[in-house]
Image (cartoon, rainbow, N blue to C red; front, side):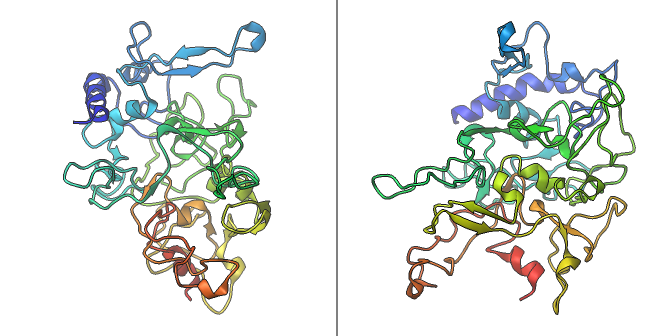
Length: 407
């Protein structure tokens, strides 16, 4: 048994007794993750005010003039030393705390999606004793081929700055590791999600690495300001104005197995899920920017697929409405429960990509192998090797392209 698994078992054992204190099911922005009232019991499900054993810390916002910022204990109830291990004490395949098993990418409940169906976010993957070591697998025993990192390692976001690598090659002629914004991003569950709730869909953080992607404007009061979300949903009962603090939403019914993404609040094309993702993937905010991608081309203008646009904008001889093997588009908030896409729907990041992970495969060499030599096209010489990374895509190879473009 690996050290990681032993730690995880200890975490589960420690927290198992605590989850019974949490009223109801653990829902995003409900249960222990928001909607707190003045008599909430949810705090005790995760924290101990005087006897917390976890070594996990956070950094407060105390001004430098007052001796800050300072490192504080998160006061968590477990022996977890990493944020992701604490989260997995509820969100794995063995615990009692949550029905959203993010390792397997499976919904294990009955009320908020189809039982044993895939989570719309995909799977981070788990080790399997019966499978080759070093690989991870989803709940169907498919190898997970790409994920967002969630175990506390550092990572430079693709498109996180002007360079996908440094501006020049090193002495060996190889591009150094991706730099992103110039500093690595520590990637764990708390990088994207706020465990205490937020104004956004699925408790996506209101500020990601200093970039506002949601929040509260304070126009009502300091204790219950008006939310200004970037990401909302077309799920039944969703508060499209965002989640108010100290407010519960008993009519809200999340769906963890059927994508119900919504167009950005107020149809603001700078927001929505795409507007949230570019908090880290900054240069992807525009369709053209000067960028060095370490792909054999120079530091030069690069062009990107349009986001937050409706499909009818590109009307032509072939419909761009996805009908067969439909990909999730952004619906109007009035279309809760919609089963079909239409030309007025929007394309955004999660139309093509999973947020957590993908088990899709890349089986062939990219057509353009050496951009300086047309004779190497289709040969695989210098090209992108197959099956190395599925880029979080929802369909095999580049099926997401054909699904819309019908070529």
